[in-house]
Length: 309
Length: 280
Image (tube, one colour):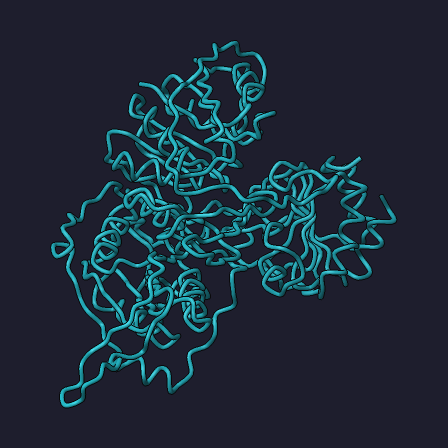
């Protein structure tokens, strides 16, 4: 039995999501190898080699994998994955983009967004925006799996001493190319890896008012998120959305400001260790999941919180 | 996509001259867009697991077109309104009831519909295989799907279809721009936006910000009833409907216990520092 984990990385560094995916892979009970596919990605491969409990690291370093184009990377993963029992990736936008292609190339189903490993072929995963948890059993000999990273504690990034093997296979589908990217430039931590997240909802009334949350975030070293309602209303961009169809977060502290607590938002943050809700509506469902609730007008409470820090 | 000028010229009997008799004359590109739509529980319905854990309880719940599929239909219709697309075909896979969602797509502006008739739900890989069969018949230049359906939350079908047809994919799209024989797709990725250029024919899956779907007007709903809707079977498309996953059990998620209410911001800050120890 063996499992291949597709690493999430930016060529220079290994992303933390990889460590959660390795944890899920280890729960399958098989030997775990990591594939780092990219361009100039040997630093990331070296980092993968020191992850605890990894057998070996496959490093496919070629321009065709440089921007993680799904058309090319999926051909590589399917090619290498043919020799493994399981192929696993974190359910990041990159993993979600690539892995279903891999599954189709291997003619197997994919088990998306698993939150627990019950046995080598049985998993739990949320459906209906997290309203229901399904226990599913794969009938395919080979499993292609994406992992909800917040549901698995990361393995140690250090302590391993796996060998790094170069993979020479070059798969260029030749049907897509990278044009450019606009990454949000921020000194704040990334939403999905921040230890504190402060999010605003429709109650924020407009995008400018998010400056209040940013001020608090800067004092706490927090990331700023938003509910789908705030994104739909055009207050803030979609990449800030926390929820079932947005980002799934599980920080040590989650502060929900002016968020009513729609189920699809709760699905994205309810695994946070401590949840604080500030809302003027005392009947808001968010209070049912909050460890600390404050019924107050956010336009008074947030500046006051800011001043107290 | 060929950049040829298609002109049908026929001879009118009795006249000694050639006149174009087929209209419209399409000079430049003729682009067919295929849109996949799924019938799902309305997004306002709070779905619950049945007490015996066998399935979710879908008795008497309101059904609707999957929100991401609605965005896909809207995008296709806008491409047609902009003169970029020439025909929009809406396809759905399911039992007869899914014709309702095809009619919704037709009311929103799709030109004709295709149902692939299956009994009950089918898994994403099978859906992708069936859609591949439809693509072979229809030869669209662009296929637009929702990024995921709000029932299974799988987020697989578009990508699987890409692999099966060897088409490029622009998933989680927030902008779609046709550029000659390519399409530029701006994608919502972790940390920002990525733009990729895809050879046509290509696959696009929609994210929330791509557009805001219109409401169907009553006259358009009436007109939609008269638009053509063909029915195929998986056998017509040469696809075997097979299960890859068995659902053993469904259950409600673990309930989180509500904590305590605080009276003031000061009390909140103290609790976070001293009791929860999450800020210093």
